Image 1 (cartoon, rainbow, N blue to C red):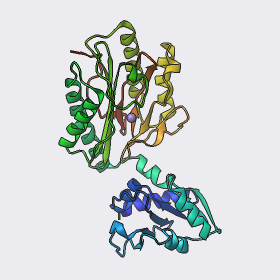
Image 2 (image 1 turned 120 degrees about the vertical axis):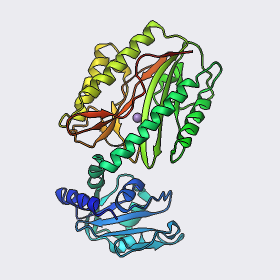
Image 3 (image 1 turned 90 degrees about the vertical axis):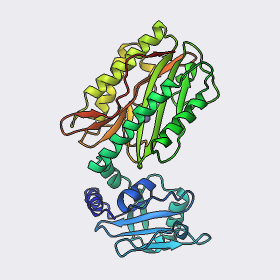
Image 4 (image 1 turned 180 degrees about the vertical axis):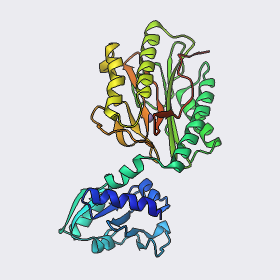
Amino acid sequence: MNQARIKRVTEQMRRQGLTQILVTSTASIYYLTGFWVEPHERMLALYLDEDGRAVLYGNAIFGLPSTSELPVITHSDGEDPVGHLAAAVRPGALGIDKFWYSKFLIGLLSHRSDVTPVHGSDPVDLCRKCKDDMERAAMCHSSSINDQVMASAISALREGVRENELASLVNRAFLARGADCEGTQLVCFGPNGADPHHSGDGTVLQPGDSVIFDIFTPIGRYWCDMTRTIFYRSAGEKQRQVYELVRRANEAAEKAVRPGILLSELDSIARKIITDGGYGPQFTHRLGHSCGMECHEPPDVSDASHVPLESGMVFSIEPGIYLPGEFGVRIEDLILVTETGYEVLNHYPKDLQIIG
Ligand SMILES: [Mn+2]
């Protein structure tokens, strides 16, 4: 149990008037207990009250040891997964983690009509938002690996290569450098780049294609996430203009990062540059997302996210322009907010690059 983190979470609970919460996200349970369990469809929930009393409820198959600091109460397959939990929670408001399966929540409520479920993720999410020294070091390390993997991916561009070959090359390069697992890497040639979430398929590289590499993976539990767009053999006038616009938006938003400014202001800075350049409607998504033990964490970096920056926050700045039927450009770095400003965790260059 990480008692320092539990203390910070219970302080947040008091501030929000919550006396009991269920922490169910794998990363949040790990953050507080040191146990990393991916329960899939089975039940795992950490009950935490305002005094820091914690009990872990979960399927016996997870093999979690019960200790005096953290009692573990198990159920077996076939038993009611929320039976023990339902018997233990107090009447009144109960904070529920945002992605807890409705089958468990509805099961719990069917036992306990005196319990009122309320949003309960904030106390942990607000603590996870600002990374401590160990977490900052882990994220710097992950992103330095990402710089290396980006370089090998870009140097592998050649006549006849397919998107999915490069995606698997990226995964192998990550694994060789200590990645925890493989991911669905985004590699997009030419018109495929106009879909922000296109993932590598059998498309073959053509001369004149833009190439988007949006590559990410957890290393030592902490994610990296970087995007570069480069051009194969040649870049036309429109491709160059769009590229420079996105690069300016990325760099202007990054330069504005400092404690106190709002995430929504960063979004506005980048969006204004792209809008003034004539491509506002083609910048179809938020500017970025926070990142840590999950690739996408709250808070997001959008015009609706009026959250002031604090030292220790890590988030992406990833403006893009998407032109259906033509091409797309996105440039993404992870940024760490420091006491006085910021540190860009990615160092792969952003100058317009034509390969081959
Ligand atoms: Mn991202």
